[in-house]
Image 1: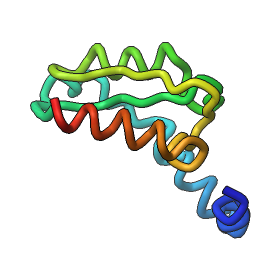
Image 2 (image 1 turned 120 degrees about the horizontal axis):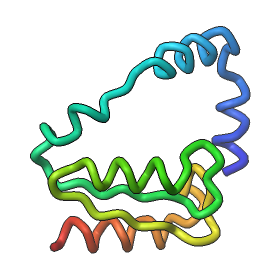
Image 3 (image 1 turned 90 degrees about the vertical axis):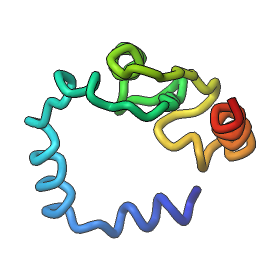
Length: 95
């Protein structure tokens, strides 16, 4: 986790700001129903970037989605709790 944080902190601030600005005005919610693939929406319980309401709205807008809240995780559960993340992902893929 420390390696990832260090790498993230090396990101050019201008590049990061431009990426955030580009995404800020993008609202694809009206097109969610067009997605035909099954989807797994994972959210860390302590994620400060994505609210539970946002994640649930995403899952509800998709034709075939499963929503899972991962306890004791924030925005990068694949790094914070890799075993739990893998278990949920494999369970979803095997259904």
